[in-house]
Image (cartoon, rainbow, N blue to C red; front, side, top):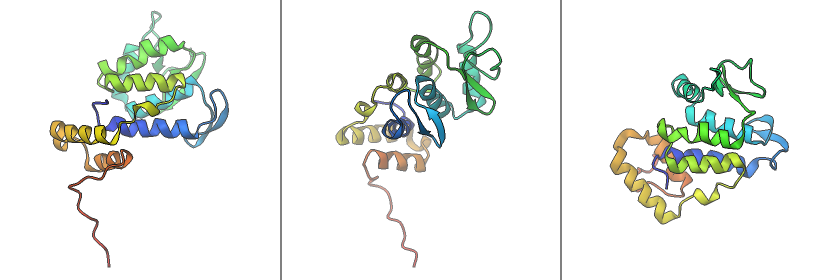
Length: 184
């Protein structure tokens, strides 16, 4: 399934959106703000999550999404955008893009840029299109295999609190976890 442990954390956030969001095209509370559940809003959610709003990955996406006129679909310059969607920290995303352009110019670039695995990029595409992401959750047996694989491959590369959170989301307990001390 996904090759990066943090992608299951992202899947959790996408699943929460799916579970709590109003129907496609309707208004409601999304990520603690009033917003319309649209492809644009879902793409903005993914961009915020995958880049962490850090300048380095957003800058790479800005270069990758450059148009023939020199403007970029992800940019700090929203003055030309028909439907600017504020990502945060001065970054904007042009919401007036076809689904094909969103996929080709942005989502397909995630694996190339190291922002996600190819498998997670497929999940993102389904999410942006408004399709369910439930099918991306692994079975308990598969989840155990993934966790063991990640531990062998990444060792201490994944912060313990992140791995702990991922294990909880997958319904697993870390067998090496020490029981919490009882403060008396």
